[in-house]
Image (cartoon, rainbow, N blue to C red):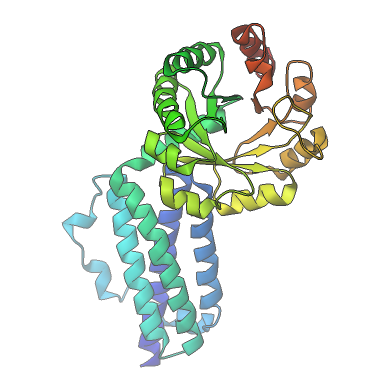
Length: 355
């Protein structure tokens, strides 16, 4: 009996490993999602750790692929997949069923192994459900597109609510044409209703101009207005809570002030980070400034997500930022207070692109 159990365990371990890898590749290459990719990788490592409780010799000795009657049984539905979504659903079903087999038959050999698999199974259910929602809703393309665009972005501008919807739309169109890749609506003096109206107008204008539209802090307004993203600080909602509100395809940016905060943001599932304040700026006052050295530390980390230097950056000091290896910046006063914001935008963008 034990040989048959080991044979089942060996086959199920292989199926789970293959299924996890299939879903991890979806998270990594289709969604371009660091957090979901990391979860898949961790599940594979946890599976290997659990399997380490079993005798490798017994597992391999029980394997009999040529004598397995199941290898000759096939269904027409398995011969092809109509879409990536179908691949995700098939891998999810196969992996979940095989985890249950591992848990139940594992109880005959090692109860600790079975307990490990049970814990892994519940983590898998949560993770695969999130992937399934993305795949079924068709959000994968939209979320992946936004993540690709934030990775390609160089110039990020923090814009206030301005005097009217029309003024904001006109400004967004002009600066996007000049080279702004991302706009972030930040105005703590504006009412909620005004912020919502401006975000609706700004998101539409930015989208038409090929730029991204992000809302500062206000997760609710970002979600309600159809923004491409939301940016939060260290004292705002944690990334997981933000994701629960905005969904899987909306960008989440996080302000970071040291290396630990930056690495934690990546682990938490941020899509990009702001790094600073680098220099003293015209908009905010801080007790301390991280300086270009912090940017060098961030570049050395070789993070999986883009990092934007922020804080007092303008045409006069942007080269000291670029010299650290950081080629993305977020600015406010450098454009807002310029005599000619369009010309200032072109100068900064050209410098960032090495022209």
